[in-house]
Structure formats: C-alpha cells, structure tokens
Length: 512
Image 1: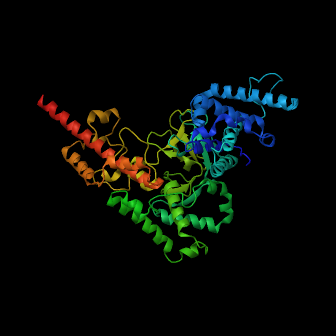
Image 2: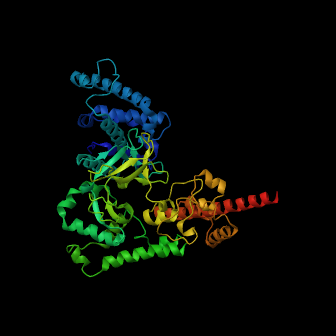
Image 3: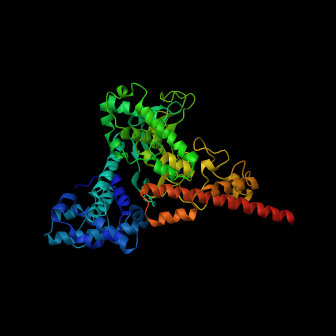
C-alpha cells in the first residue's frame, strides 16, 4: 500500500477510528516499522504519526484529526520534536546519513525547533496520521480505498482551478463530513467547484428524481469522454446498494415507520422509479442499448434525490444559460459531501464573481480549524420524517427536536416546512428563539389534544422502541427507522408538555 498525497487522507483516521476500538492502535506498534517501508515512505512522516497517536493516547483523547486540531500547536510541536528526536536516533544507529539530517534541519545531537523543510505541513500531517494507523489495523483496506478516492477528488478539484480548504473526515456521530483546516472569516470561500466539472441535470420543476436519473445515465453512456473526465467524482460517490432513500425502501422497513401516510408516500416514489425504469417505451434505446440493472437505475435516482443541488435563477442574469429562468439541478462534486445543519456555517451558492461559472461554499460566520462545515439543505430537512425519507439520516439530537412534517396541522411529507416549532411554543419562549410571526398561535387545548391523539395511535411506546435499540438485535438500517420513531414520539410528547404547561400557567395567571 502506497500512501496518497493530499488533504483527503486525513479522513481515513476519522472514518475508521469511530468504529474501531482505540486500544487496537496501542503505541506498541512504534517499533514495528521495517527498513524497506521507511525507505519507501519516509521516516519523518511515519514517526510523526506514531508520536501523534502516542500523545493523544497519553492524554486520553481519541485517535482523530479533530483531537489533533483541538490539541493545537502544543500537541503538534510535542509530537514533532519526539518524532524528530527518534529519527535522529534511528539514523545514528544506521551510521549517520548526514546529508539527510541536514536536509531535515537536524544536527547530530538534537531535534530542531523547526519542521522538516522538505515536507509540506499538510502532506506530512495527513500521511503521518494515516500510515501507522493502517499498520495497526485501525484503517481497513476498504476504508483506505474510499478515503484515497476522496483525496483524489480534492486533488482533481484543485487541479481544475477549484478550491478545497477542507479535509473529508467523519464527525462526532461517525458520519462522513468536511472540516475546515484554517480559520475562516465570514464571507470567505472555503470550497469552489467549476461549473464545467459539475453535472447539469434538468429543471427541478419538470422532472422527478427517477426521470432525472434517465438524464444522468444518458449523459454517462452517450458521452464516454465526458464520463471518463469525471472519474474522480464518480469514485468518490456511494456505490449501488450503499444509498438508501425513499426510492429504495423495502416494505419491511416501511412497516417500521408505524405511519401509513409516510409509508404510502415512500411506496409512491419507489413504484414510480420502477415504472420509469420499465417504460415509457424507448427508455432502453435512450440509454444507448445498455442493459442497465434495476439496482443501478434506483441508485441513480437516489443519487439525484439526495446528492443534487437546486439553484434558482437570477432575473436578468444571462451568464448561466442552464437556468433559463427556472430552478435547475446540478450534481456538484465535493460540495455534496457537506452535511446538513439548521445552525449552518456555510451556504452553497453560485460564485459571487459574475465572471466566473462556479459553485462555492461561502462562510456565513467565523469557523475554527477542525470545525465541521455544514449548510442547510432546506428548512424541511430538519424535520425527522423529511430527513429520513429524502436523505436517510436523522437530525442531530437536540434538547427539543422538531415535530415531523406530517405531525404539523395539515402536514404532508413533501414541500416546504416552517423552520421551527415556534407556533407550538409559549410566546415568551418563542421570542427568546427569535421566532417570526405566528409564534404561539397553536398553544391551544385543541392542538394539544390532536398531538396526544397521534401519540396514542402508535402501537409501541417510546420506551419500548428504546429497548429495541439497546437490545442490539436490529440491523443498521432497521435501527435508523426505530430511532426515527423515538425521535418523533419525543418531539410530540415535548410539544404536548409545553402546550399543557403554557395553558396551565395562563389559567393560574387568570385566577390571580
């Protein structure tokens, strides 16, 4: 295994260490390096990773890039000096190698006060972290390949004139994401992808995800040169069978929703995807005679549904012919690795430079090194049911989770959704959150009774669902559906509790 250069390799550490016991990467592997590997990969890089791991373990920290970034310059300098001192000892034992020592900024007796000038800081950081952990079997070959693909994507974006001041890793929940590597000020661009390196689909108003999948597959099969030019992007995406959205939900999992409306909505999309695959007549010919398996077609539809961006038109702007006065979907490499958060720190938009056809991630508030870069997919994506159906994730746990879209008055699992539940909060509480007009309008006995009726209709309780999860008998996907039930019931219970408490307080005030 040869290490890959570039920012993305740091993701291997996070991707793997979240799901691997830390003790497997004990510092006992420090002396397991072999001379051929040292020669091939560079001793300074290797020892740096080992010493970083040792310093993190000594401090009781996890083996993650985020922990390294939290440790700051003190951790980095401590590990670097220890690694370089160890390097001196190794070369002394090997008989000197004075030219190498001079190139590394070393003398014959001590470690220097400066880093090795022949290794760029980011490359050393990434390779040093990855290599020893791979040897310690914390990073698997499959995980390494995935991270290498994302590293290749970053290098490709930059080589094409884009920008990528980030690393691809996993967040505290073990979910893939992107993290800042420098201090970012509001208004600064963290990442940029040229439009010519993106995939234009079709008007989002006119086509469903399944029909957009036909457009995507047509492009891939008809223009092999174009398809090959995007190889770094295709390799970085989930492969067939790895994406799971409403276009692919199976009946066994739909039953776990405990909601007929949600299940019917998902079945509608699943059925429509298969109908588009089976017809209309000429679809096979449109795909240039390729025998596209159903699994590949469903994957393409799920990819369009969960990874694409919708960009609105700008009146009078003629620089983007694709927009044609209406919203258009694009698959945008790299930027589709950003996770969702209501409290986002970047926005994804067309480049503010009117002479540049590109998409950018622009900071909307100060961002620290190591902080995850997140943007808001939409206000609806913070609703548990929309997040599950459209993206197969659940919103980040919060003290007061939002109600599901279907649990709002007249709610449906599609379309826009209010950004918060201020309508169900007492006026004072809603005002503290900066709520807009309509705050507190649903703090009524009728609304509390309606929400209580939804809770009473579930065949299982929140406690029962939590016990199912703790029991460990659920598969990974089944567990997500059951966690959704817990989150939905918790949001309903908290909304009812807030409303009842507000009504009770109002009655007491009236009596006084």
